[in-house]
Length: 126
Image (cartoon, rainbow, N blue to C red; front, side, top):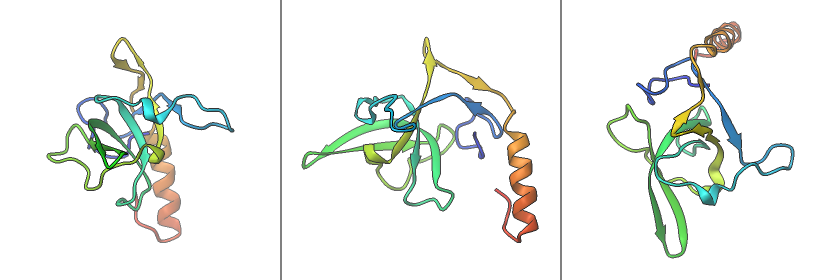
């Protein structure tokens, strides 16, 4: 589920995007080493306290035999602050004919409920 404006105009806050997971109950749906430039991925961020981020791969780099990905939100002016290692990738957007499968705005129910309960316990909204 998208919680920010960083991937507009493709994905808007509250949109749900269909993904394949690297690992689901011990089964590998895809190999993160097969990611290519242009793929939209979900990764565990080391710089964002919210954890998972959904952005697009804009470059694949290799330094001293170590592969890293440069990732950027489509709406963001610059790429994400730290390179991403393949093992940080948790999901990849499913595409059909270069089009992602998106369910618009359905995530607002979840965002509303998260914010309601976060407010109850004194945390800021997402």
